Figure 1 (cartoon, helix red, strand yellow):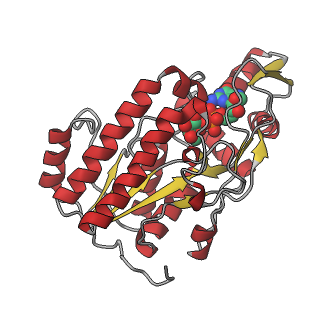
Figure 2 (tube, helix red, strand yellow; figure 1 turned 60 degrees about the vertical axis):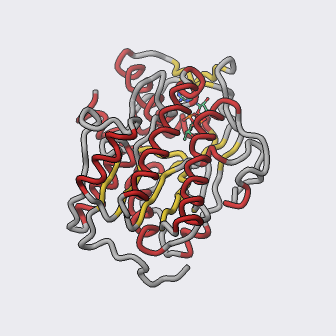
Figure 3 (cartoon, helix red, strand yellow; figure 1 turned 90 degrees about the vertical axis):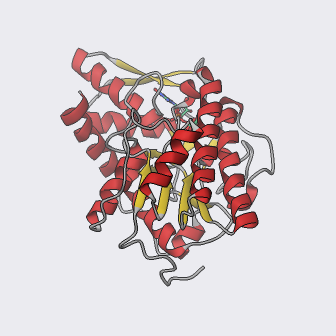
Length: 315
Ligand code: GFB
């Protein structure tokens, strides 16, 4: 690893797979800010779960670089309700895009994983070498296993064929463009939407799932996108690389921060019949920090900007 640019992105044909999602849309904006217009394709025109379609598209468009941000994702309830989709879709997408990239001679590829790949009892902050050192959190094991398979695919294609395929493991993410579905979404957009509805209807209490004691690390999507471009240009290696904000917060404190951002001043009521998930997920992001990347958007500011986007585009 080095501070020097190993692989400059300027003048490269870069395909952002999954460009409408939270991560993909942030990547498109980050690339455009650098004057790079990435390749994209709507989901209706290319189903990444279909191998022939995917291979044909890659062959026809000849990207130099692929950033695989396409995935079936969701919050804890979606993971528990739709385990088959979470494992099948993600395994197929990864296998098709990674193999397709190899067949087409793609120069560099970055695959996105998640901090839920690490064992549920991993020591925090979690270093990359804790992968596969213990049992997974059951609420999202199918998704986590698919993402672990993605890491293993990239490592195997690197080892056997010399492909420069790398993987990044972000912490919990949020930001404008997130999925605000109250059942299927992650905690920030789901709670923000419910806090907004509670404020409008003058409700006295906001229900928060679980005990409020789990700790999570939240990174704003634009900070992640900058980090991913840094990684593409500065890193080449088999090991996955963690990328997180560096601090975690309890769900109770997060709920209070969301209520403040939304302007909901009622009580928070914790529903312990809902699942907590893993107790703590805080990543050790020393490798990213060594590349001189650091997040720029703190949680209070990020929540305000996310709420502004929700009001303008969604509510
Ligand atoms: O965001 P979330 O679904 O992700 O939940 P995970 C985080 C915590 O917030 C859990 C609590 O302890 C939830 O019980 N929570 C409180 C809520 N209120 C709500 C709410 O209204 N909606 C939601 N969704 N949670 C997912 C994984 O786990 O995180 C995925 O299932 C992935 O595989 C993703 O890794 C980043 O951190 O628990």
